[in-house]
Length: 72
Length: 412
Image 1: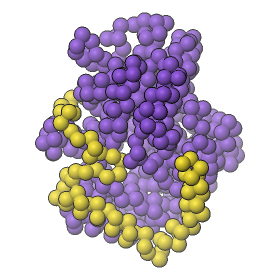
Image 2: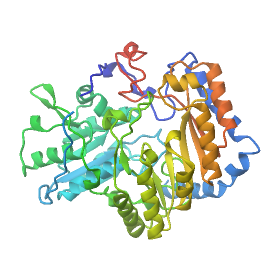
Image 3: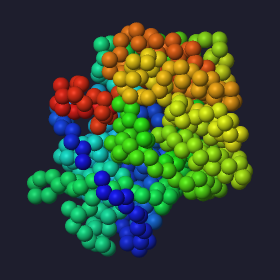
Image 4: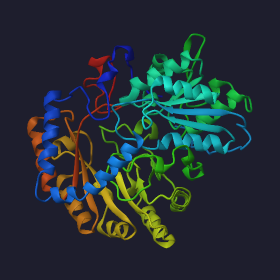
């Protein structure tokens, strides 16, 4: 049995989703964490060694888009 | 913890019982995946004679009003709604509306398991299943339909309201032999009705099915809430049982790719080799990957090469950080040098490598985040996913950190 105590009514559940938590638990503020995360992705993918491999999935992106359009 | 429990199936015990599962509308979610957990619950109820239905509010982009209309047409005896912290609000709103419309509701899932009393009180659900859910839900349904009436207070793993208060029963022991579980009820969410990349990662074959071959993880990473339900106990399906499900998916649904979404597929090396042997022997023609993350310290070159021979084309690693102190603080149990060696070795074996990184773990600084980005770039990875640390109920790492400041709530 979990022993956590919680004031659920006092929580703003809008702060939570799978990809953007709106709370920082380290010294870096939330807004800066999001900027660093974006920067990490750009720095990682915008490299000659990575970009071609990434682009080969373009066909799949088209396919994904087709599937998504099929549903929506 | 009490001894493990066995599964008892009685095909007539839920005859004429209708169970409806609903994924709430959650517009922020981009993953549209068949819900494996609901699949197992439905599989168990159907094996006992129940009629099960499923409404996917995420994939079908339904409003609560549309869900209520569909639910009313089905006339279910009980409606189940999963509760995960990121979608808690959406689930809570759905349960409240279902209650207003007169449905009997049961909640379950990781968030409900971490905080059963609080969740039951807050959501207004009639019942709440915490921990491993198959047997608890089965016993609840049998009790409700009268085939095997049993006082609710005697059903382990169940919480419910009684006389204006809440009753939280004792926890249910884990299922001893998970091979005994019926397969997920795939007919409720056929793989070809989901997008090409349902788990949010790139794929090679379509239709694809994400399956779990084990439950639990013996490790204790502070940022992960998997142990809320699985209690750090690793239980695995046999290779034969896993292959039987894959064969069924290929035969009945034309599946061409399998994604193993275990917490860590390679925890038992011999079992993975046995799965590889069977895949090769039966020539099912599927490719496969592990998009959920495989532990660096559970792979060796021979295993990686064998996996590649048998259709594995991509492995994702939960690397988390490029700073050793941060890794140690979250009790990841891996070393940076080890990560570099293993990722390079898997790449040499011909398997595409992907890495997950977390930004903003407790105690992080701008410098440690910079180290993580540099480390990711240094590794021979084809893809990297950087995420901001987020919270689930029941997470160990935040207990005593900021949880108390937020009303005593612990997050992961």
